[in-house]
Image 1 (cartoon, rainbow, N blue to C red):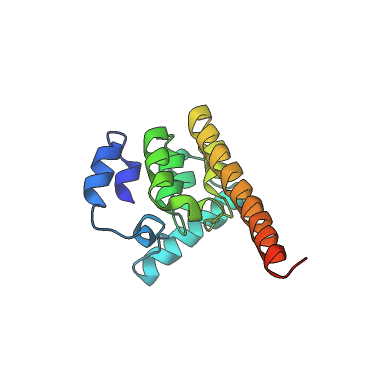
Image 2: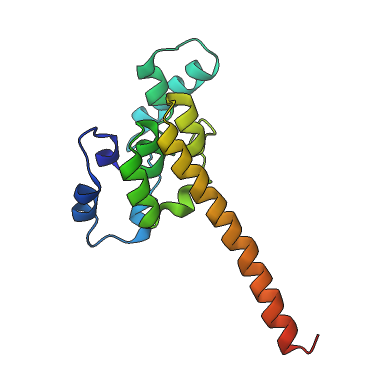
Length: 149
């Protein structure tokens, strides 16, 4: 996930890093490793939520906990990485909310404007919703045919 925050990262780099990874790795949610860091991140979340801190640094830390690689790439507007992640198993992260309650599309709006990245995420969300509806229609059609309806 850290590679998604690097402005010089490319889809090829992610592909080589994730060559033997499962889709669960691409959708891994970032968590603090120790109680101390969990507390620090939570304090930043509260401070940003209360509008006490407004710097980019504070905002970035507040959006760290619970974020996926898709959140990280969206936060920095890395459209090629977002596209690669979506093509390699991160579609399940489209509706995941980080500790600040933001999905990757929300993160683009908070840290953006990144129009290309936003368009990729909207397109992916729409295709997932279409697949859900289309799949349920297909199941109903095939189920109805089997039961003689």
